[in-house]
Length: 378
Image 1: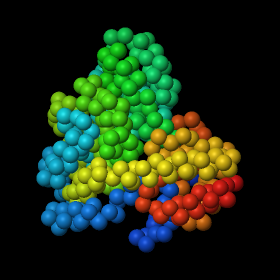
Image 2 (image 1 turned 180 degrees about the horizontal axis):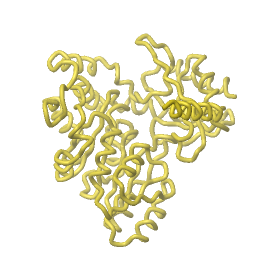
Image 3 (image 1 turned 120 degrees about the vertical axis):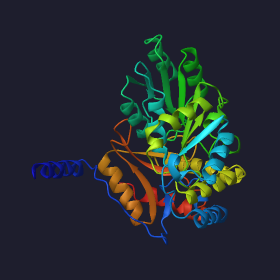
């Protein structure tokens, strides 16, 4: 029986040699690090109105939802948030999950029949990839952000029910998907388009309504939207938004919805407050986009390979996993938290720092953080 532990230890040694060890680094409530790693894009996680809404719901409902949505976990707060999300995303209906990961797993499975073909962008998030795997149907990966490549896949499988999967703003490099073109390709082949708008909601589009609204395809009958509620909205949870028949199907048959404890009401109410606030804060979005460009321009001027940001994500190339890890640690030692993305978290097996903008960080502190990233690079 001890052999299995030896195997795990050996695998851990190999990962460490390859620079792929991961560590949990807890922070306390008084953390003073400059945050260029989290996803609190608009700085709403600590906004007084968000905290007040969460505190009121905590008093009214208690700590947890106490059950799944179909047992005792659904509250007025959940219904209100779903209505608000459907309106914001331009869809008929919306269904809230306890995480964006479970939302993606559930909807990919729900859209898959035995003959369904899943056509997935090469840079899609792990939750969409795992959804494809769990669906148990044929999946074909197409070249990143290449509608012609997706069209070629669909043309090679005529008559098959199909779903094209993409993000709006991609989570690793922060680039924007060609959503209008992908939708045109999907429609031409009678396929559905599934868009994960996690990094777009609150960040791009009119009043921060997201990438699908910005692309002019919201509410189309062949478009399904998912998103996490933990990024620009500063909370937790996930959502699937689309036609009423899809939401009905998920409620009746979706295992990641039926058998999961509901999102706590306090978090639900806080997210609803953040959603309402985000619609009115074009100033915060302007700051976010300005700072994303500032990251790009400052680091490129220092000779670093930096992506062009569509939202709040900027990717900086590293030569190796070991270098990326050492670079991230050096930043942390100087008081700057940055994301360190290494295989298997990256779609191309490359490594990079992933920097995310928080509009709530003071301007001088933000500028100094960029100087530190340049100063401590390996």
